[in-house]
Amino acid sequence: MAIGALIIGDEILSGRRQDKHLAKLIELLSARGLSLAWAEYVGDDPDRIVATLRRTFASDDIVFSTGGIGATPDDHTRQCAAKALGVELELHPEAKRLIIERTLEMAPAGEPVDLNSAQNLHRLNMGTYPAGARIIPNSYNKIPGFSVGDHHFMPGFPVMAWPMMAWVLDTYYAHLHHATPHEERSVLVFELAESELTPLMVQIEQDYAGVRVFSLPSVGDAARGGVYAQRHIDLGVKGDPALVEPAFDALRQGVYALGGTMIEIDGEAP
Image (cartoon, rainbow, N blue to C red):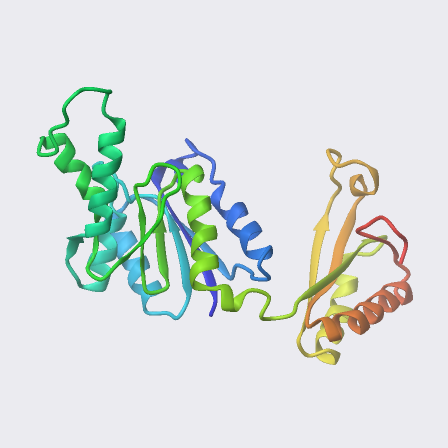
């Protein structure tokens, strides 16, 4: 099962807000021996959200979606998920209870609360999800997110979304944690162009099925300083631990044969 991220909101695409969810999801997955296969950004366009969700619902992917599940006019994710699935929106009973509980908690002490006021009835819209949805607990303010199959929808606020992501991973996918052994080794290569390394990279992948080679060239990163300030290529292999070590040795030998110099990422010479 591939894992994907769907990040919804005009504010991300316009630059008014900087997305922080992608990096955090990668971090949460990595801690559990998992990895992200894809990510998409979508604005607050209902037609585009529906089209995207129809495509992802048709897959077997695990999808984490952030943003657009509130009850303001620019929040469309709940409605679009229902439309993509061809089902109605329904007020989830547990979500209703939690929203009412939160409403009462927020009321000034000693003041009566009219749960039938227009404002409080409107708040219940945050608990209307596609029919058959399950709730995702919100440890910050109790207003839940929701899951439909392997799609998991949460708010755009990191303080709410990130604990929800962790809860989903640990509640529904604990059996996948560290299920696929994975290792990665890399070096910084100097004095060689990426084009000179390409035949070596191709050969390594042919000789060691199950290992992937990666190459990340840099013109130099003055901010990081040290060896990173020089023009270099971050060259490495990743995949099955049983194959990574021999593949990495072959990669280093190939770089030496081409006349390159190397420094391992941890700073030790290979």
